[in-house]
Length: 223
Picture 1 (cartoon, rainbow, N blue to C red):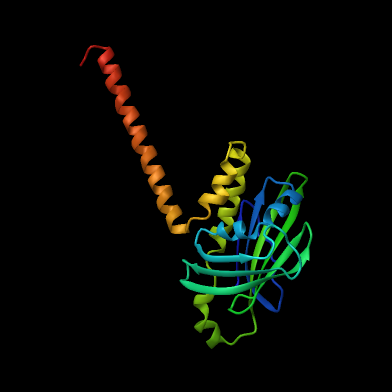
Picture 2 (picture 1 turned 90 degrees about the vertical axis):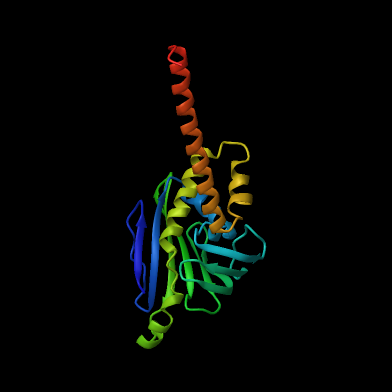
């Protein structure tokens, strides 16, 4: 089950010998402290996964990160069809550097989120999913469907989110629209809405093109 992927950067082998892991790394033009502070919004972090439909999210003290914090999550992963009802527990917290979300039950044991400084104004985010390595081949094959295959799209979505926020965050209500409205929609509805928006925009461009041609021909007296 071990795999790795990099988004705008090189992946780092951080799997230990007693675990099986998959990870993705994302380079972002954000200071490490600012990025880590943003990651404390755990609900937003998980909703950025474009294939994870969150049915229910119950969190102690939203926006605050501390050892032992618990989150109750009910979700459906569109990539593997896995329906999950799990309790996430914050462990291994290193302020400004990393934290671990342990899973009570299921094949996935933990998700480790870490921030590495590249420069004062840029950093690398690494998200690593950990699975048990010491399982026999029969059980590994039987539970292969539980492996989360959405990690790479999740990393890409996180990167695009922060890049868009850096570019358009100055617009009034942009942050509210993204966090309070857009990300609250199920991933499937977001994809449909995005398709409708692009189709409407394309139709408008075609209309303008036809209108300009008509106006030019009219001005030349050809019509």
